[in-house]
Length: 145
Length: 116
Image (cartoon, rainbow over all chains, first blue to last red; front, side):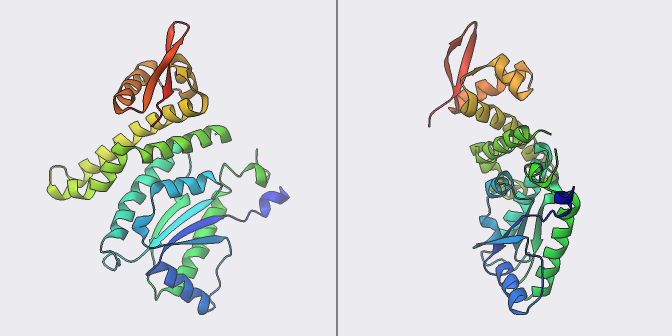
């Protein structure tokens, strides 16, 4: 039980180089605090993220996966973020079929000037994952059956 | 759900998203909707149905890779899919070159994942 109380989620965040990663950088340089549960992976575009990357993150024990990209219309590669949005729909459908809560995966738009929003987003997503509990693949580590 | 069962399902999902059919459809879905042959809802329904089919095929393929060669009754026991549906999947996958007949186990043909 004591172990369960200390649950700290492991979150993988794929951030696009041009907007969200710069937003995360701004959050850091502006000294906005956000939970340390997130591991950021920089990709050139949110459209670069294959659904397989998300599934692999879950398979390797991530409790949540966050995909962030530029706001629609702002994509450096014109429509990469729209491709990511379309894929995200099917990733959620697939997670539901597999038996994982679709809320464990989230797609959000964060621009380079939205450092505060990035910090808020990480806080909120971490809370959501804490509420959902550890991924079924890591439940044993946290004192579950 | 058991941890091993979830891992098997995740492996199946990975196989499904690696399949040519799903990748092609995901890549062309916006074009399909733009051309106007299907409404966005119809395109979504089509892709969701194909994704479900591919999840089942992914499950079969990952079972064959991990524990193959397997017969239809063995596959049915492991995946929980009806034998008739399994046969249909296996025939389609043989046509795609993803599965091959390995030989016989007793009275049944055993299938294995094709080497690519």
